[in-house]
Image (cartoon, rainbow, N blue to C red):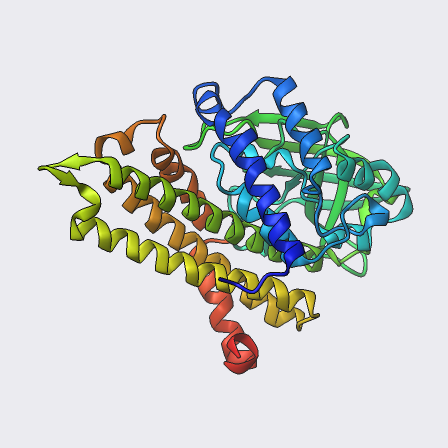
Length: 390
């Protein structure tokens, strides 16, 4: 067992009880209703999460968070990952970098209301020709008197249908930082923003991933996040947070799958004995548990290193390692769980079927597995083995 403090064990237990009692019972309903659950239920989930201290775990108290550590956030995210249909997304996850760089006006208008749950944002970064290669984006940000003009078409804008503002990433068209990246806050109702289409995806989430067009969208200069040319630094910070969060949720999903598959195997009788007695089933469960243990250790230790103030470039590579390993681990566990459940594992009402679909994207978004391998190898070449793995 990982040496967690009594406080962290208590947080883990609270989060687990919350997921088991509040989120999991609504999974099948959400699956059959395009990811949606009744609004009054979602409101109750939010209120209870706040009372339990699961709200913005790693943010400073003065900004509305719980002022805890990166490991606190990992512990909470892991338990939330045990629920399918993105029901765990009920808890906002404002990245700590935002409170560090946002201006006083931006804190009042966007960041603090988001932390409190009164507003919701969505990242508009990816484009048709620019996914993992973020520098390939074609979106532009033109400096004009008193503000900026945004142009570009963004793909896979996750949660755009639930958001009321966007964090738009584009390249400056002129000035000293021409060609460099910037992030700009833009309200959803700003003229010039339109939904091109909202594709259907493999999973059934209430949060959609539409394609949005930004056409001569004018925003004040005060909407610029940080400084001109600093956009990629904040995007990298966001990637580190998201990759660690994905790893955490993948551990939670694998935990749930192993428990559910084990319980089924013990009760499912074929040829006069529980299938749990079959060596083939035992091997699948043993491999799954071993891989989960390894992924959990990596994820927890990466969070602790961040909390200790580890070198940011080393952390960048380590976040890629945990995202790579945990996401691929969870996919293997889901595949085995479907096999253990047999025909039942192919039914949408079964947790293994839902996770089999849902976990697949974790090997793609926030950087594909292939991109993570490039980042890891690059870190090895530049810094050597010891700073990355000890």
